[in-house]
Amino acid sequence: MKYTKALTAPDDYKFTMSDDLRRIAERELNETDDRRNHALQMLRDWAEKNPRIVKVRMDSNFLLKFLRAKKFSIPVAQENIERFLLLRFIRDGNVFMNLDCRLPKLAKLLDLGYMFALPKRDKNGRRVMFYRPGVFDLNEFSNDDMVRVHGICYETILADEENQIRGIVHAGVGTGIGLQYLTLFTIKEAVRITKNGERLLPMRHQEMHGCNINPALKIAVEWGMTLISEKLRNRIRLYTDIKDIEMDKSLLPKEYGGTMPMAEMIKLWKAEVEAHRATLLNDDKMAVHLHMYPEAAREGSVSSLKQNLNGCSGFKENNSTYGLAGSFRKLEVD
Image (cartoon, rainbow, N blue to C red; front, side, top):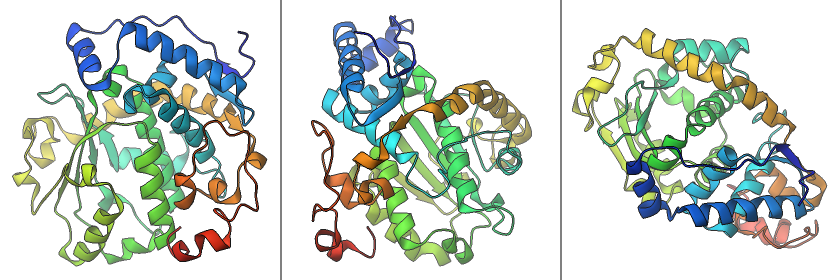
């Protein structure tokens, strides 16, 4: 088949990683050579025939992160890819696009160490994403800046196949975060970001550690926990102080009990981000026909996540499932 919608060319994938990773991929993700080859072919053919898709990457690295996140369920991966493409257009200003680490505000957030991946892997071979939200100055940065820097960092770390297979550990310190930070997003926005993020981000979240969280935010944290799945909630650990964190502390920045200075870690992470910059900017050429989706789907509403995209050639804009009649009871958070 000739792939006219391919932003990047289909490639003949070869598994070149360790035998240990091969075993993990097969045991935890149902990945074998035959299943992988079949799934990649199926996804490429599906994307080419899908009337809603205009342009999409068809290289193995891009497609495999969805297959691995969905344990090689082809229909679920198809759904994830299409919604991922649509997600890039759901907010005003296309905030999930132009993920350029050289933009002044985004570069500053990276320099401040708002979030960065720790250089060394943990005992299970996983990378750790470290967060310092307290450096996010509400007078200088917007919620769009926050969304974009997360997009840059997550896309960068997921470009590494080992991270796709092993998954990611998250750890952060809440020092400096107060009630004023709750004004960054409306309740509706917070719910949509959380629900879409968990459903659509092709990342295996293995552990989540939160430290030094302001007691005044307890109610907000408890509410946020209700928005995520039970599976993710069971992977979250909260600590009064980072010294109590249940992970190898030598991995952390020196300022938080580790060995390597944070400035050096940030420099190394910025080099990784810069190396992935051209790919991220080229991803902006991926597109879907927005007019073929109902308004709720274009806005990333929670109710639209319950509608199956697979096998549909389009939606009716006046479908009550998406309209006021179907969404009225969910109006406050949809």
